[in-house]
Length: 55
Ligand SMILES: [Zn+2]
Image 1: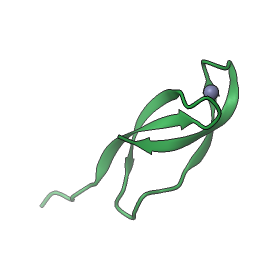
Image 2 (image 1 turned 60 degrees about the vertical axis):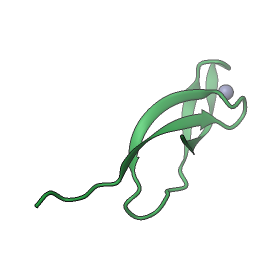
Image 3 (image 1 turned 180 degrees about the vertical axis):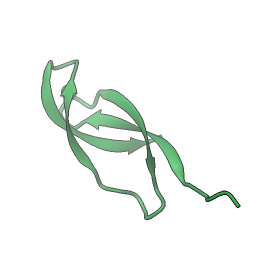
């Protein structure tokens, strides 16, 4: 029997300029993870904190 996986596509949104720079899929099997990642923002051309934004 196939294992059920709750995978969902989410956006990683810059907390400084609100531009959605990355798209990824993560597992919601144990609730919504509150991830904050340092990613490169193309709009600002620097590294900023990005958070998960569900569709
Ligand atoms: Zn930004």
